Image 1 (cartoon, rainbow, N blue to C red):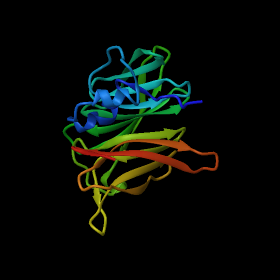
Image 2 (cartoon, rainbow, N blue to C red):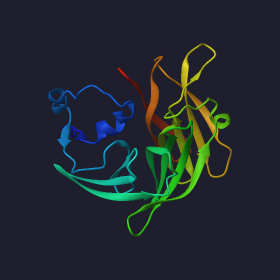
Image 3 (cartoon, helix red, strand yellow):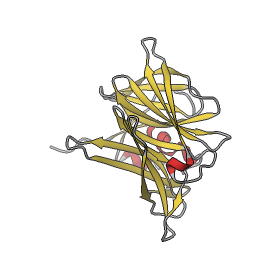
Image 4 (cartoon, rainbow, N blue to C red):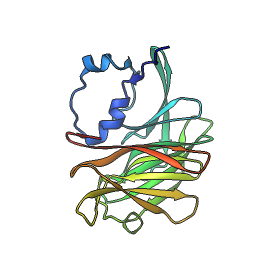
Length: 231
């Protein structure tokens, strides 16, 4: 039989591109030939990232409004449930969200006015609130680059106690090329960093998704973007 067409959620293009602040208008006629479109009910402004839980529901995180949105797709519609987020340190934007399993989430953060990056671990409570239980700051020394404000933990994915955190700030390789730090966190072990080679001089790591295989290997897909850059 023919392959099913992918579903284009109205929020998805915002979640993947919002952090660039400005992006080209969507070519809706071209998109209509490839995607089915579902318009979401009202959500908090400034949606920054998406993740999917074990039940197939999407979760979006707002950048500055302390709210996560649970999204359930029903062809050709969707329902949304807002979840207040409590305990994010003041002065931080929530740029990324990852479902870790068993109602545990990780939120990638960056400083609005200070050069900081970190991960807030949050649990979904019976009252529907996401409550931060602990925060893991990431230092310049651990990441390997000098952070600047609004260039922190831009992308995140994980499972259980294992996380990959994509940093928006870039470093320079010996050959002059640019790289994005991809920080690996596992339990209480010291972090390790992979230098993800970027393909352009201006692109930054914007979003990642990862798949954990039974043999212990991990596959990561990322988006490199900037004004006019989409990789």
